[in-house]
Amino acid sequence: MATTILTVFIVYTILILLIAHITSKKSTNDTFFTGNRKSPWFIVAYGMIGASLSGVTFMSVPGGVYTGHFTYLGIVFGYVIGYAVIAWILLPLYYKLKLTSIYSYLEMRFGQNSEKTGAAFFIISRLIGSALRMYLVVFVLYEFVFKTFGIPFFVPAIIFVALILIYTFKGGIKTVVWTDTLQTTFLILAAVFTVVFLLKKLDMSIFEVLSLSAEKGITKVFETDWTNNKFFVKQILSGAFITITMTGLDQDMMQKNLTCKTLRDAQKNVMTSSILFIIVNIIFLSLGASLIFYAQQTGFQLPVNENNVVINDMIFPSIAFSLSSITSVFFVIGIIAAGYSSADGTLTALTTTFCFDFLHIDKNTKLSENEIVKRRKIIHVCFALLYLLIIILFKPFHNDSLIDKLFDIAGYTYGPLLGLYSFGLFVKNRTPNDKFVPYIAVLSPVISYLLNLYSEELFFGYKFGFEILIVNGLITFMALLAISKKIVNNQNEIP
Image 1 (tube, rainbow, N blue to C red):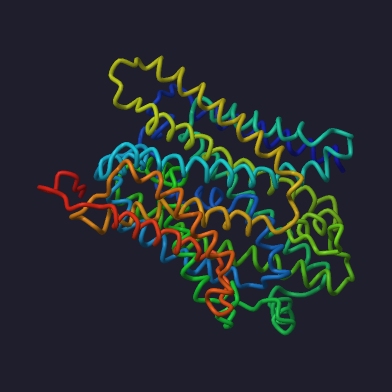
Image 2: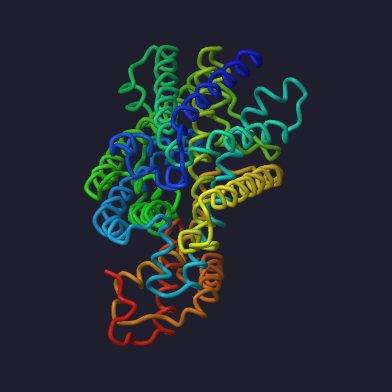
């Protein structure tokens, strides 16, 4: 089995490299950073599904059904609200200003300290978040494949990071847009095929499984206890703001959107993605219900840690590998696709952000095209090495559902971005003192963390969930307002 899976991995990688070779022909710096702004909107929309899902959705969403039931769907509903804000507020701004890095807006509106602060928070957020997504893929392949051959964990980690570096090295975002379509397809196929196989094993239809699962409380969508961190109102609000920040204020996701030919195309792309995202997440939640129901019906022993607590992230792979060699292969294809899709765009976006917001290569008229290429490639390699370091260092700490960890991190790192952009967009007649912005951006997550830590004592038993992101953004916003001054002659006003 391990040899078969390794073969699948190699074949899939060759296919990705072939696409990269085709899309990177005659590539320039403009190709790497913007895809020459010629990407078909429907290709971007479809590919964004894979980029948004990643290995976290592929494993943690189905596995999370064990403890969280279908409450994650509340967050998904909130995503639609967030995508609407992106389509009709943020994208018009980005296209009007002709941005390559979206954090250039912060320099135009506030100053260079604000630009670097926004870019730095994105880099921290994405480095950690994307590396953890990638870690999950490496971890599964290590446990089920490489460990069999006695190969240490760091070897598959190096292989994965090196391959992503190779196929994004030249074509950049143009290559990512097209490889994401392939990865989205295999992510969805892997989930659908597993559900079909489980249904055949159980000799039931999906409607029967979901109906019986509902009787057991597995498909519960709305948590009505307002003190619970999965309270449905909190879930919807959190989903909206997670999308606004982790997509609309995220260079990785927006860089793909900004490769579309026109604003109208980009808007169609975003709203189409929001609808597809609901459908795909319902598929993954249904997969989770099918997995749990199968385990209950057959007595399958779910994977547990040393404390005898079920490991949510390992439910899907453990059952997939126990069913048959075919489900194992499909699972591996899906997880490989998830790994590539969660890391390739991020690596490109990190390079873009550093080049534009720290080195300002777009404003340095002394740099030739070849000199920009050289700097870009050095930065690309450096971020790949940081990726690898985080993946290796995280292994001893992996014990809970990874999706919760990712959103916990996002709540603290994307909050300052939410506050900065909200102030810039909605407070037109004032501007904060640029030199104090970095201190506010650091202090806000600290205050938010303390509020989260003592929320039950301070707020009559209330527990913060992902909505700590909103609190974080509000603290940033109010602090910016406190240090702001009235604009004279509207010299900093950005349309």
